[in-house]
Length: 514
Image 1 (tube, one colour):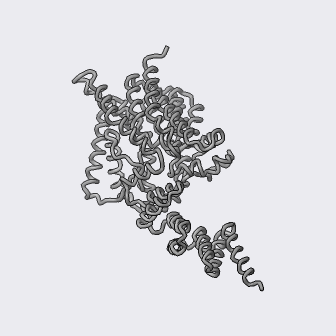
Image 2: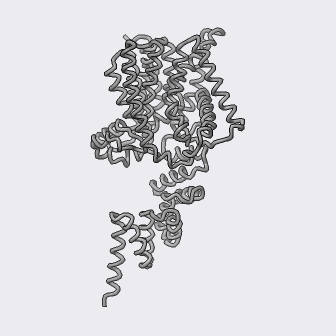
Image 3: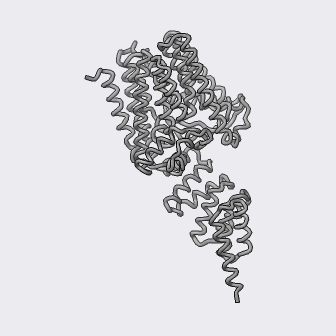
């Protein structure tokens, strides 16, 4: 027979599965899902040695375990998005289960563990990690990381090492788990002796440091290409104060969520900067004071800080923040949130449970449901982001690409033009706009767009080839050959450029024949 706490966990898992059930009918979205799955050659034709090669990255990160999971799904089910979403949901449920048992291992009590796991399971900030196929790496890293922590506490260091390696192969943020283990050990939790604990924590720290270095190296090109990379530490800290204050507010009142939050540096004299850091420092002081009375508060406060550390981007560049960055921090935040309700028992024994139930019913579930609907298609996702960030060209371009995939050029054209108004140098948007002109029998419009494109990107192989093709179709052979030759100089393997070049030459010989 199920114990009371296990029965409660079972009910929680069923409720979570029902809450996230709509994700099973969602699509692949046009933001990293294609790179991770649909257009990933390592998924279609997997080679284990290549997948685990440290030089093999996907969207700037080394995630071999994620790639292998997608490769298995592709081998068994092809590109059925329902399968990939179902896997994400199962992984989330597994994370919820392991978090519950990890909290029991910390001896915090079954009721506190179950209520904290409830907050973690249904919190709206989780939606990005669960409903987005490309965010599989969050779930795999958390699953393996929780298993690592439990194995460490149970004095099974070899098992812990295996789980840590799997976590580190899922996402770079898994470097926080050895730090979590160190906090737990320092608080006297776990069964390892002082000598063995020090030895194994040193090994875990070395693995985490190597993974951190790999992440920094693999993402250097991406980070270096951002304007924020030139910010001083002081400028970055003016941003991070506001980021942390917003994340603190989003835990209790998770409204106005988005895939993307843009930030810009502000002077320290800006009241927003001062107030943000004041809120963060005040929150830290409350946790520190609570930790003096209850070590659990200190442990969970450390979990929050360490969980946010890899994604605070203070050193690389605070280019943007995202809901998924709070995934690990939510473990500590959920427990602390429930602990903060404990003093209400002085007013009424059941008041904490009633407040938590009201928050779940009136805040968490409705907002989580709304966020799940946002992640249903690329169109719903980009429209939601553009509601919050209407001046980011990248998202207009993404929406335009989606409409083109659906063969709806009538919707795509104005969206692409809006993207180019914001950033005239966008190569893909300009190429797609030129292709729309070609399909609408407007070669002069296509030539105009391609000339603008080559003004920004003279080494665009696709731009040179397409302009040569359009000019050739208009009988401007000399200009066409110049552009096709340039395309072949840039990329001798471009078969389209070679085909149109040969066609022009054949046409010339035919017209010159007597």
